[in-house]
Every structure is written in structure tokens, then in C-alpha cells.
Image (cartoon, one colour):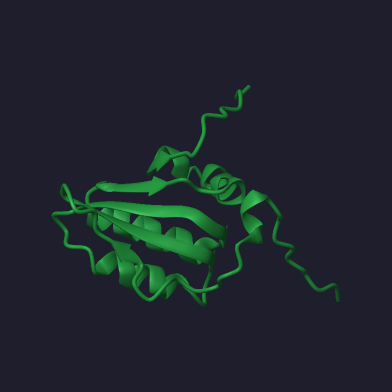
Length: 128
């Protein structure tokens, strides 16, 4: 019987090494009604609950930005957290700066058309 082996792709962001979210993953700017949840490392079945907990600490009336610029890998566990937060907030959630590998996961699943995704740069691939 063959054993499936998952190789995580390497991109610009894979040099970041942390597997866990920082203890204080919520950063509230001094001005405005916005909170930024900063995620780092890999978001998978072992770490998705930390992302969920950080998102849940943000009051519902606050604009929520989930900064994924330091996330090197995200599986369906992380996607589920984002989708659940999007639904609970009636779409008032922004995903900021996903690395290329995470952006591909969002695109493959179609979530880049459901969630508001702010990309770090404007490299748009032609569909066709």
C-alpha cells in the first residue's frame, strides 16, 4: 500500500519559522474601529484553534482584519476558521496579504471570491 506524503510548497514566506500564533495575536490600532489579528507560521489542525480564539477576542462591532502575511501554510482547518468568522460577522472580515502558497489555497477553493482579500501586490493572472 502506498503512503501519501504531503510536501508543503516553498515560497517567499516559507523562511518564517513559527508554528504557533503569538500569544497576543490581536493588534488594535490607536485610531478607528478596526482590529488586526496577526497570524504567523502554519495554520493547520494543531494551530487553527489559536487563530479562532484570537478572532473571537475581537468584538463583533469591530472591523476585523486577519493578517496572513507571515503565514507559510494553511490547510482546511484554517480555511474553516476564516469561513466561520466571515459568516458570524456577516462578511465584515478582511484577509490581508496572504503569501503565494496561501493565496493559491484561497483561489483553489474559490474563497478569494467569497472573502475580501487584500493582496500585498497586484499580480493578476489572466483567466482563460
